[in-house]
Length: 289
Image (cartoon, rainbow, N blue to C red; front, top):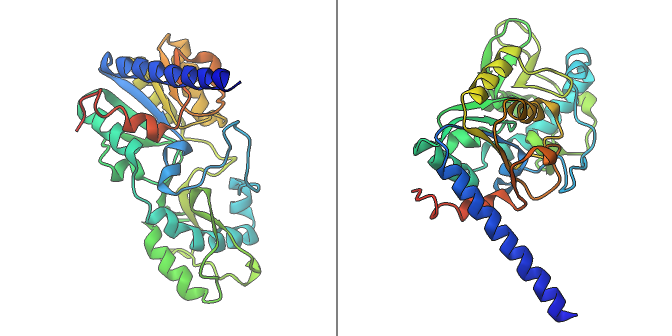
């Protein structure tokens, strides 16, 4: 029994080794990749993911765009939780996957990186050509006049206006946190320009990515050598559509993700492993610094 177990373990290790070797060859042979990253890319930076390794939702229901727009109580709930959760995103640091992808871009292998994350960690790692598909949490916009402002500045206003808020909570994805508080007591600051409603500059569930952004990514895919998916289950269609488009264009699709994804039937290669471990081991083979 022990011999059989050892044989299975050895086979799995070899299989991962060969998959990683094939990933190295794929990147080395490319001159213009489009990369699509998801929550798995930031998990090692301390930002929780929405789904488990099987792609199953493991959180309470997220806030929806229309709910945030139409219900003051929803905005109170969002900002109360965000006050506690935002520092976890603001203080997060890039991990090996972010730095490796920036290095791969630096040697001319990546033409565009599209991230579904809203934490700006790719930019903090030095990545230049990034499309924040779902926006960025460090920015705030007014729904009335369109004025943009800093999330850091709003944090100060929220803390001053709400001294009753707890000092900590359980961190959740996308700058959220689980806290117990009567949200009707929350004072939500308004726009300093027009007194309008303030919203994080992100795409909430139920909202759509701007068509112009989607079309520009499609154009990049048509000019690319292939699509590399890193740390995403692709359960949300806004990201999965780029896998579908790449397949329609006949572009090779390679995925690095430890669990089940929506695009499993479309890949030329899948490295079924944690993306940080995979990219940490690619630094030497790819001759990256």
